[in-house]
Length: 241
Image (cartoon, rainbow, N blue to C red; front, side, top):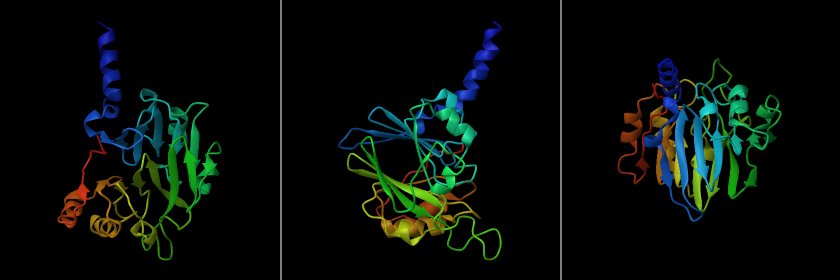
């Protein structure tokens, strides 16, 4: 009977990771892509027998999840670049791609800068600029400087998936083409409010948009702003209790 409390604690510890109800499955010509929200910006992507993590970071416990074949990091802040979580999610064969500013800290990563494209095991990975236009901690300063952080467009089996990273509705986002699924941030003061996010999404018109990195935002405002556009809005729980 002494094992029971230990077992219960173990189940509680991994419960936030067992998010099958929130997993989204997208058919492609190369087979399905499964995308599962983990927490805030941390995302699990599975396709073709490979495991990809975007921005693995605490409080996710990666010891209870499959090891990464690929890790993508968007920026230098702790909710995107967490060396401990990266180590926990990795093994000796894991590939890591990140902006050059991240590579200064995560030295096992290979750089991918704004505007670059790389091919990886059936995926095409494009680094999209992610930055602030006007918001910052003080006059003349920005939370995210242009050229430092990446969003990513990931293409697999003919389907294009966009992850915005930390950004406002910058011209490079608004100019995106043929996006099937977009994961778009919205949280003040660091990125943008739901109204601005919706306006940017209208500009590039993905088939499906999923808010993420939205702590404290009113997603109903985002949904209402996109009514009648033909863009499907899916709201997932990125902040499990």
